[in-house]
Image (cartoon, rainbow over all chains, first blue to last red; front, side, top):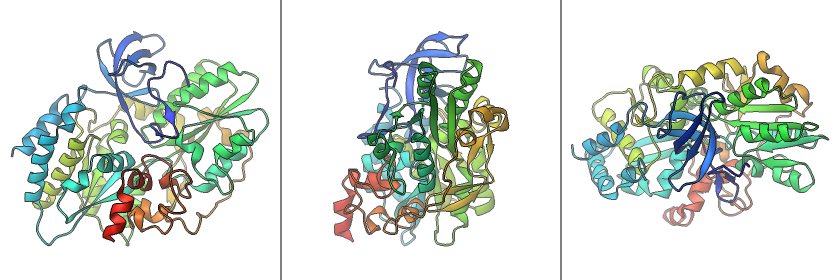
Length: 92
Length: 371
């Protein structure tokens, strides 16, 4: 595993890739030509991520990353809509 | 943490649980399946089932990628790993999945060069660092993971890498759901749809569930409030006599999915006529293989493998667990002969497996007492 990976597979704790888990990361820097981005999680760990499936993204964007590849932009579809709907359901 | 803490608010959770109580009919039993292993994990980690009325039962589905891999495919991978000059790479949980005689971890202990990777891109990096060796990547996962494998093969081609090969075990989510719905031994009232698969495929592919089977499905996120709200939405549909595809996970899932990812999957993969699922047998058009256009990277064309179908151990009831027919603690070997340390079945290996979730979050002792 590359040293720059924020999260990896650890058999003793479970493998996040096998678990179909995706991680929300902040985009720090984008290499447009190679379609790669340096991303960081909320605890400051960094990894290089493939962004070909969500480009264009820019520094400051939030992407959902699975197996080293960004598969969605976190705010791209519904933003805070999900939480607002939870709150609405809870106070119906 | 943004988009995490808000969805773990205990006060909001208790209020939502109260609303759920108002939606259920006394005397009716509700059986809802969470398709994805990630949801199973969240449900037991956060005790979500304890917040639900007694007549709302959550049933675990087949959405844990390593849990559904049949033993014969593990044997095929091990056979490749034992080939001279091969560096075999795979994800973490896959290392411990039992084959008919050994796991990849056992094969590594015997001297095979097997390396754990976090992404297929790591495997490609190993191939570039070892140009005189063949590097085989054991690809597994649903549509969440398949785009990463597809991108890696595209990158390998663009970079002129000729010593990188992929043994493709990717599967698709819709065919097993249809197989479950056609199964006579399972009566379900609704589905919590897989959130991360849906970031790629969208909510659209699940339209057949209400259209053909008249069941509701709600695509959901993985935080506790996501799952609770999905249950609320499903029960709301049932209370109102509706059955639709609804999307709770709007912060990342769209109706159409990630079109760029879907195009890429169509370019790099093609559907196998049949693929075997552990406990579910062969399901038509449920597995992916490398397309003709990328045949140079197909490990199954480069290496002879046994290709033998291997029956699961008799004592193991992963098949029934994966279909939601029995609860993990109802399996004869759960927590005795089969534990996370010494697993017999796949569901005890992955942290997303239903058996591992039950075992790790203390359901083993408690539910046995109830039974």
